[in-house]
Structure formats: C-alpha cells, structure tokens
Length: 330
Image 1 (tube, rainbow, N blue to C red):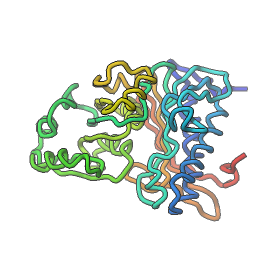
Image 2 (cartoon, rainbow, N blue to C red; image 1 turned 30 degrees about the vertical axis):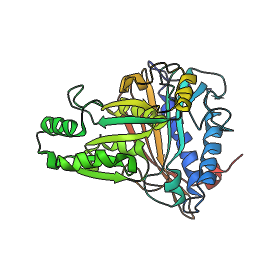
Image 3 (cartoon, helix red, strand yellow; image 1 turned 180 degrees about the horizontal axis):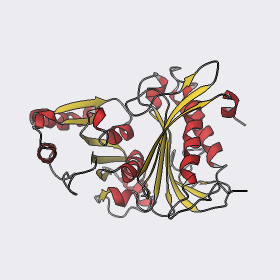
Image 4 (cartoon, rainbow, N blue to C red; image 1 turned 90 degrees about the horizontal axis):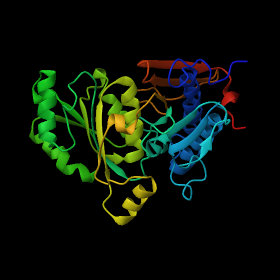
C-alpha cells in the first residue's frame, strides 16, 4: 500500500499537495452550507471541524504554528496542536479554515478555506496581532518596494519598473479607518485604490495575476494571514515584507510567547516561509481568484488552487463530487 507521504522528490512529498486540496475542499464545503446565514462563529466552527478531521487523516507529524488562536482561546486547531496520524514527515502547518467569516455570513465574495504546509521549523510563528504588509508580483528586481518607503515612493518605483505611468497602477488596500492616510497618499500620487472589505490573503495573491488588475498590496492586516500570504507567494512568485504591529504590552507579550524577540523586525517573504512550501485554497464564495462552492441535486462542485514552492507548480482544480455524503461529518 502506498503511504500518503510517499512520492517524495526532495522537500515535502508531492502527493501531499493533492492531499491538502482535499483538506481545503472539505472545510470550504462545510462553511458554504452556512453561507448567508448571518452566523460568523457557526460558519467558522464548521470549517474548523471539517479541516481538523481531514488533517488528522494525513500521514504527517504536523504542528499547527498559525491557527485559530492560542490553546486557551481555541478548542481545535490551536497553535501548538499536533495533527496527522503521527507517521510521515514533521511539518509546520499554517491555516485559516475560513478566511472571510464575515464574507461567508453575508454571502459576499472572496471567502476561502486556506492551508499552508512547510518542512518543520520553517514557518514564522506569528502571534495573533496585526502586521504591516507590502507585496507585489514576480518578475521585478529584489527590493523594488519596501515597508520603510512611503506609499508614494513605492508606487513610483513600481510604475517605473513596469514602464507605465503611475495612473495605471492599482493598489489593493483593506477598507479600514486605519488606512485613511495610505489611501490618501496613493490617490494623491495619481494611482488607483481597490478597496476590499476582508480577505487580505486573496488581496496579496491578486498582485501575481495580471487579470485581477491589482499591482501592489499595502496596509495592515492580520499577522497569521501575512504568513499564509507569504507562503503562497513563495510558490507562485512575488515579493513581500511584513512587520508585526505591537503597540501595547499585551501584544508584545503575545509575540514573546511565540518566540519573537525583536518586535520591530522587518520580515522578508523567505523569513516568513522558507524551505519547501505547499499552499492550498478552496473557494467558499465566488471571488476574483476562485469560484465558490456550488451544490446541485447531482453533487458538489469545488474550485481549488494548489501550489508548491520547490517545483513552482500551480494547479487549479475544478472538481465535481457526485457523492455529497463524502463531506458529511463522521
């Protein structure tokens, strides 16, 4: 019998990439059943339960390093929880069973189920605080944009590298009051702003796909989501920097418990996700990157993206599952 961890060609097993697709598919289907119901917590819990069940079926020695919270805050998929059968490779796991709980509750676009897996000890153990982020797609000189540069300078540098006027640059920013100054600066320099209500993982990944019209991502979002986005860019190509936002002692204490010593450190993409990385996401609701779950009398349709850093492979999987019962909770 072939192990689920077999087929290794350097780094993580290539078969784990497809196994992770099953993990995000199951979580996405579970969450989609509560789409538009107005209950964020119930949708999130359904995704957590489904994802945990599928992760525990994998032949891995997995440790959650980015999860639903610290152990005393989350009953399942908490930071430090061990998942898998206990056989196979030791791996770090970063996950967001439902990226966009509000989006799902309101049946809005761009809700995802997301998992990243890397060799043990290679993912940044980011606390549940905010992170200042900047990201662009691939094909540009390293260090073209920088967190310590102004939004105006970053926009001008990107426009010059692309060979276009700044008016043709579009920056993706979370629609939050804290971003008023960034939004104003982007518009003042002559660029466009694409505001998103939630889902900054998808926002970062959008910079890698010309069809989205997004050239650069800027602003403050969750640190766990920052690590997941960095894992995705490691696979698909791009640049990203992040810096934790620790404005009070409670936030610094959270960071210290995760092993963070320099609270002002600027992390590169490779510092947030190194080694061989596999990233998987399945659409819960329709979005710019993935279609959402579709249920008919005949079965369930899912749309998933799976990426691996070692090979640079990006798979987009449209699957039809005739047996809806396969997604039932055991």
